[in-house]
Length: 100
Ligand SMILES: [Zn+2]
Image (cartoon, rainbow, N blue to C red; front, side, top):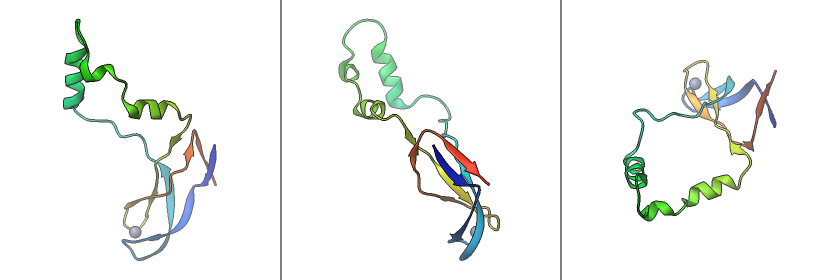
């Protein structure tokens, strides 16, 4: 678990000065409209009988992800003056706690 302050005095490249920005964890983006072309292809290949072809193999990304027990968190700084969001460094952790 990582403890982070709720507010940080950071430089805003848009305003060109240091401001107290609020730190928030960005929620995982959900894909709109459902399946990708590749996902449709995989579904078609998986139905019924026969060889799954290239989908018989487990994707490398999945095996890599399974070997890790934590994920990188997406942290964003919001500027109160211009409302822009800036990316903060992303620690690899399971949980983030905001301390006042
Ligand atoms: Zn700003």
